[in-house]
Length: 303
Image 1 (cartoon, rainbow, N blue to C red):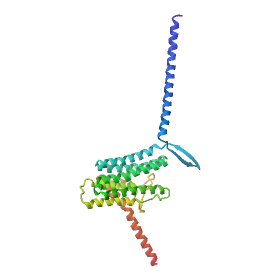
Image 2 (cartoon, one colour):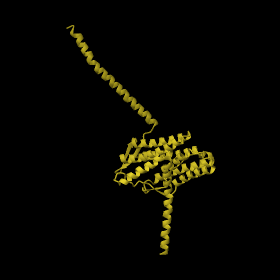
Image 3 (cartoon, rainbow, N blue to C red):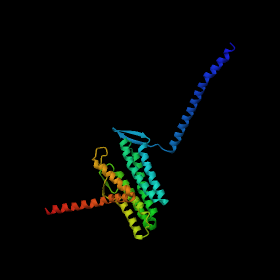
Image 4 (spheres, helix red, strand yellow):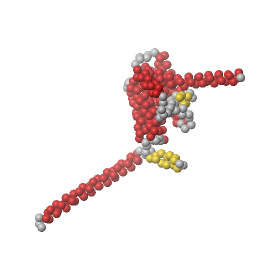
């Protein structure tokens, strides 16, 4: 009997050890949960959670938080625009121009990803607009100013400001007309295309030692004119009526491959020609349309 007692005590102590470990684990889990709740409350006091109201079947529903995937693309576009500013200030104008084109690609993807995944939101629309202002408004103007416009003094920064103001007004007008405007056409030169013209211009000419005042003034006038085109009533084809989900002729894919191959020969020059052509397409189309209307009116008067 005296030998069995110690064995019983050893068994009881061995059985008590798991329960003690479990109790300690529960206490640690409760402490961690309490710490997480306190941290969440502290963060909530500093950073307010995003709450959106959406009307569904006549009832308002409140949604907390944001969609991550499309806003990641928007954040990438914003980062690229900011990097372009930093690169331009450091004199690396090739990297600055490429960063603006990267922002264009990411900006084109965020909206499409949101529509394809059903993650569209009012927050995403506003965030995208602000990112566009940085990437396609402020960044191209500051890169161009760091490159050449600063040499023109007051005239140079005024030209840069005209571009920035044009981008801001263009984005504001687009936001208020998004529900009523014809999706097939843009009113005014789109800000990404305007930024592409300025970025490609810097990319092509930054290696050239342009010291002639006339050439510098001409570049400044081009940048200011691009800013004015953004707030004009000139219509530009939006390409939004192209359905990427349906079948297309084989020649369409072949044409895309040829365009990419041509751009690869000299990306800077080819992109400049491409977007300058798109920028000129609006005024040229408007002139031809006005001329055709004048001819129609003349024919009616003769009749």
